[in-house]
Each structure stands twice: as C-alpha cells, then as structure tokens.
Amino acid sequence: MALTVSKTPTGSEYKVKDISQAVFGRLEIELAEVEMPGLMSCRSEFGPSQPFQGARITGSLHMTVQSAVLIETLTALGAEVRWCSCNIFSTQDHAAAAIARDSAGVKAEEEYEKSGKLPDVNGCENREYRIVFRIIKDRLLVDPTRYRRIKERLVGVSEETTTGVKRLYQMQANGSLLFPAINVNDSVTKKKFDNLYGCRHSLPDGLKRATDVIIAGKIAVVCGYGDVGKGCAAALKRAGARVIVTEIDPICALQALMDGTPVLTLEDVVSEADIFLTTTGNKNIIMVHHMKQMKNNAIVCNIGHFDNEIDMHGLETYPGVKRITVKPQTDRWVFPETNNGIIVLAEGRLINLGCATGHPSFVMSCSFTNQVIAQLELWKERGAGKYEKKVYVLPKHLDEKVAALHLGKLGAKLTKLTPAQAACISVPVEGPYKPPQYRY
Ligand code: NAD
Ligand code: ADE
Image (cartoon, rainbow, N blue to C red; front, side, top):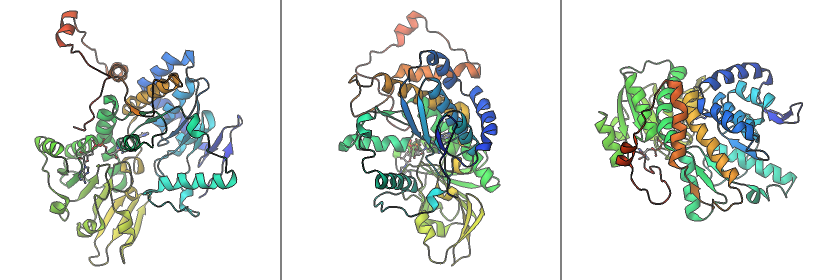
C-alpha cells in the first residue's frame, strides 16, 4: 500500500498509516516516559536553556514508542526533528501517528518499497539501502541540485548499533568518512545493556508472539556469542532450552563454555536443533543448504542488524520451494524433496522488532540518553574544531552519568567513596578515555 505525504496544520510533513491512532500512541508514549528516567532528566536539565535552538536533527531508527520519547526529548531541547523508520517491520503505527500529529515529521511507511522499480544498486545488500537510493535517485531526477550541500551542512552523526559503528570505522580507515561521528554503541551503558539485557527481554517476546511454541526442552542454536548472543542465550536457557553456541572468536567461545554452553559448528547440529538464531552482525551464517537439512518446523530467525545473516535469497530462489505465510512475519518454507518445512521469522530481519515491539523502555532510555548527550556534544562543538572527520566515543564520566540517572528508578543507593578509598583505587589515565573496544 503506497502512502502519501500529508501535512499537519503547522506544516510538518508526515507519511503514516493511520493518523487516528495518535491517541493510542500518546497513551503508550506517556507510559514509556515513566520508564525512561534518563531521557526525562535530559528534558529537565537541558530543556530550559534550549541548547538545540536552530538544530535540525534527522533520525533513521526504528519508529517505536521508545523512539518517540527520544524524538520528543530532542524537540523539548529546541531541535527541529524529522524521523525515518530504519526497518520495514519495526514501525509502531500508533507511535508514528502521535509523533506526526504532535512533534516531528515522520516517514513511517512500511510497504512502499514493495512496489515500483528500484534503481540498480550493485553492491548493496539490503532493501533499506535500496529504498534510500531510490528516494535519492527520484529526487535528483526532479531537482539535480538537491543534496549538494548536505556534506557541508552536516554537523555530525551519532550511531546506535554495533553494525553501524563498524561501517563508520571502515569509512574512517578508508578516508570516506565525511563528518565527525560519535559511536554511541560502545558506551558501556549502551552495548552492555541494550545489546545484552534488551535482547534478553525482547528475543523470547518475539519468539512467543510469532510461533507459540514452548521453548523449554528445545535445542536452540545461537550463532555468535557477543553481547546480543549472550543475552539471547541467557533468555533461551532461562526459558528451559538446551542452548548450543557457534563462534569464530576463541575468547567468546571460551566464555560460552564457562557459562555452561557447548560450542559446536552449525554443521554439527543443523539436523538436530529446533530453534536457530543469528546474532553475529556478519553475513551468510545460515545458508539454504543448512535450512534444507533442518527438522520439520525448525524455527529460523535473526536478531542481528541486517537481513543478510540468513540466506533469504537462496531460500526464495530454491527450485520448487513453497512459501506458506501463516501470518505476517511468520512464514513456513517447504522443501520439495522432503516436504519438510522450516519456519522463518520476520523474513530474516531482526525478530525482536519484526515479531515483537523491540526492547522495553527502560533499557532504551540508557541507549537514547547516550544519543541525546552525543547530539548535544556535536551541536555544541560545531565549528570549534574539536571533532575531526573521525569516530569518537563519549567520555567515561558521561557513561557513568547515564547509569546514575537510571539507578533511582530501581531503588538503588550508591555507596560513596571516602577520600582515602578514592585515593586507594584511583589510577592515572593517559590520553582520552577509551571504553572497551572488545566484545567480551
Ligand atoms: P558483537 O560483535 O559483540 O558480537 C557478534 C559475535 O558474533 C562476535 O562474538 C563474533 O565473534 C561472532 N561472529 C562473527 N561472525 C561469526 C560467524 N560466522 N559465526 C559465528 N559467530 C560469529 O556484536 P553485538 O553487539 O552482539 O551485536 C550483534 C548484532 O546485533 C549486530 O548486527 C548489532 O548491530 C545487532 N544488534 C541488534 C539489536 C536488536 O535489538 N535486534 C540490539 C543490539 C545490537
Ligand atoms: N532497538 C531495539 N529495541 C528498540 C526500540 N524499542 N526502539 C527503538 N530501537 C530499538
């Protein structure tokens, strides 16, 4: 269904499925605000001075209730915000409607990329990229002078996820990074919370909503034992599954073993397991030849950022394969030779946002408070020469501030160091703070 661009009475453009859902969206946003103490305290600390006055911020990130609280925090600090969903299945229409009605321009269209001709995008592996390319190409046809000055105007970018920051570091290394960037993912209060505890919560949510199978007793294979893999494996174990991990990194593999989880290869377990999950941020993890060997109704899903961990192309083009859509985002693919089917969730895209509503508000408050702080820093220092066209991480004291803002909500009381204790444990640090750049 192609959606059209509409305008609010104040002139904001939006493209959402059903603007009448704004009332419901607003109610859920109000519930989320109570669970997002970091963002709400940004509003009370920075709101009065309007630090984003004059800033235009654009976001490409799942358009969820939690993102709505982030958007409204940025606008409460004076920014003009436009938002674009980063995944075709993750948009929560009611949240998008509330934001479109009340706060920012939103393009939350889920289906428009399924129709129309795409440009030739050799080398681009996923549909989200292709959508962006198509929009750019179409706009350039109408106005060839468009987009010329973006690079000059762009103050900087803050990046949310492991896969995204990897791309930024690659661009930095090959000289193609055109702007300063802050790596939000590697704040400890992001990667060690969202990726770990967030996925621990939202993976089983997605599995249950999509399939209704009991997890207890099943054999579940988790490909990758980084932060996301650790969270997912923990959730599956807690639900009673017998978990097996695949890894390429000896340290992560050893960690899995120390957590009591066998480490094998996919080939070892492919015909025995009931649930397969990819969490690697890498590509070509579960291929069609693996899927062919799986048990009838084995569940195959991905929680890594892109839809290239599972070989969807190989599956879709397998001769004689039959796709039976049980419900949106739950498909049974039947192989002609065996008549066995496998159940693929969210078409190989991230299950927790395709089959469920993503991470809960509290954990997203940690991630998004880092985002607000990063955006504030980039905007404050614009033109001052502090940031080059490189990737930066936030300093440790800000990471600690984000954590501190979330303690009260959980009733914690922090012990204070005495001066003697502080002296005892303080270590001189040379150079800028570097949060752990490893995944363990
Ligand atoms: P990470 O780097 O900490 O972990 C990835 C792990 O996969 C590493 O331990 C690596 O050794 C392993 N790996 C790589 N290639 C492999 C292969 N071929 N076989 C087996 N293991 C392999 O990354 P992370 O922070 O855990 O993030 C993983 C992915 O999840 C990224 O794409 C990230 O962007 C995404 N992510 C998703 C969500 C979500 O809500 N769905 C949240 C956070 C992160
Ligand atoms: N990533 C994971 N969960 C999310 C959520 N609820 N909102 C936005 N991005 C997310």
